[in-house]
Image 1: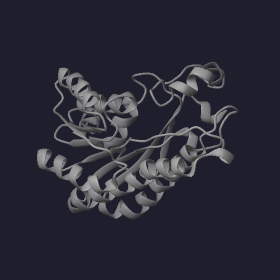
Image 2 (image 1 turned 45 degrees about the vertical axis):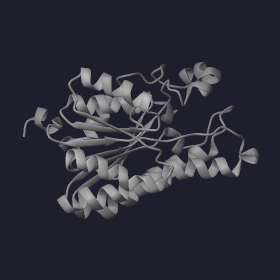
Image 3 (image 1 turned 90 degrees about the horizontal axis):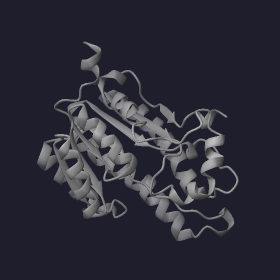
Image 4 (image 1 turned 90 degrees about the vertical axis):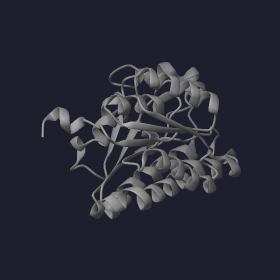
Length: 257
C-alpha cells in the first residue's frame, strides 16, 4: 500500500464530539479533507451551523447533532442519528470536555461531578455504544481520546484545575485499558494530549499565564490551527494500524521540561 493510501480516509465516517469549534473543528476539517464523512456534536446549534458552513465550503460531507453529552440518556439517540445517516462509525474522536478552576480545598463537589461526568462518564458510554453497534461487529475501528498534558502531571503555580487533571489522567488510562480489551476486535484506541492551544476553554488561563507557558515550552509558542491535523489523521488512518494504547503529547515540548 502506498503511503498516500495509508492516510486516505475515503469512505470512512468520523464522529467528533465537541466538534463545532476549537480543537474539535480543527480535527473535523483534517479528517474531512482526507475523505471522511464527518459528524460533529455540540450543545449550541448556532455554533454547529457555523462549523457546518465552514466544512461544507471544503466539500466535506457533514452532519451536525445538537446534544448535551452530560445527559447520558441522550447518547443512544445520538448514535441512532449518525448511524441512520451514514450507516456506521469508523472513527470516534472523544473530544468534548469541560474544565473548572478552583483550589482543591475549595473545589465545589457539584463541579467535580460535572467534570468527571462529561470528561469520563460520557466518553465511556459513547465509546461503549459505538463499539457495540459499529466497531465490534465489523472487527475494525479507530478511537482517539483527546486527553491533555494536564493528565500527565500536576500544574504550574497559578493553575488550579484538579478535577480536569484527574479526568484527563483517567482518560489516558481508559485508553490503555480499552486498547488491551478491544485489540482482539482489531480496534485501535489511542489518545492525544494537547498542550496549551488558544481556545474558549483556555482563554481565562492564558490571559494570566500565556507568557509563562510560552517561556516554559521548548518551541516557544502555543499550539496553532494546524497543529492537531497531522496527528489526528495519523491515528484515524491505516498509517497507525500497529499502534494502540498510546498517547501522543502535542505540546511544543512543554511536558518534557
